[in-house]
Image 1 (cartoon, rainbow, N blue to C red):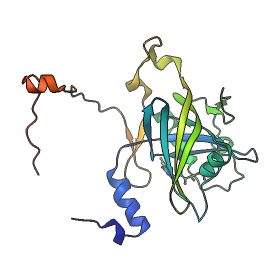
Image 2 (image 1 turned 90 degrees about the vertical axis):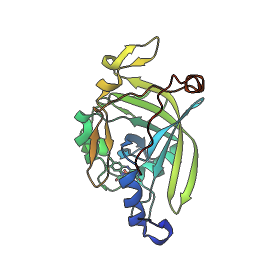
Image 3 (image 1 turned 60 degrees about the vertical axis):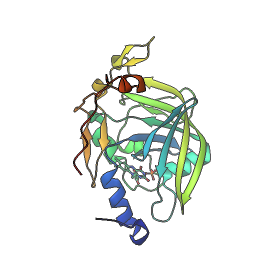
Image 4 (image 1 turned 90 degrees about the horizontal axis):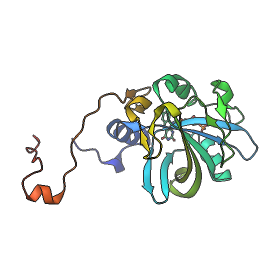
Length: 218
Ligand SMILES: Cc1cc2nc3c(=O)[nH]c(=O)nc-3n(C[C@H](O)[C@H](O)[C@H](O)COP(=O)(O)O)c2cc1C
């Protein structure tokens, strides 16, 4: 079956992409408006983009013909915090996707405990296992009111219990218990089903020492 994206409606294009590009990590973003109103909302069009400098990208779509509060806040102030979401925070995170008016502080609404950030004004969520203080490096307008924000990560807070060896930057990733966004409204995935495949080198491959997988059935 083929889906010609140019012939589909926006909602249909969303369904095709969001049902297939899964699982997606969730950036639970805290930001502050130019008027000082705090905001929290989840975004799963999110990933790491590089390490020198350390960059992340977030895709923000419009809502009701205007920028989402998070997009407006980041574009106005250049500052935001990405909080990662574990299972204990999943319901609170889900509540903050509510289409509340711009003057509503979702941090208060979801009764989120927060701590001050060190390099940016928006607070970080204290119950999140990981929080990343970010500044906007650039933004790309990809459509009417649709924007990709590229963020520079300045400071990362990881709760002590998840740091195995700070010197070596070893993190106990499985214990973070992060959840990811799946297809469909309200669909999430736990990150417990881990498996490993060794990364090949060309030398090992040509010497016949690397695994040669059988062709997948088509
Ligand atoms: C898990 C999850 C992931 C989401 N990811 C995105 C996303 O990547 N981009 C987007 O525009 N909206 C996304 N949304 C919807 C926004 O969170 C929602 O529109 C929210 O009301 C925006 O809040 P704001 O106006 O306070 O920024 C997501 C919602 C949920 C529950």
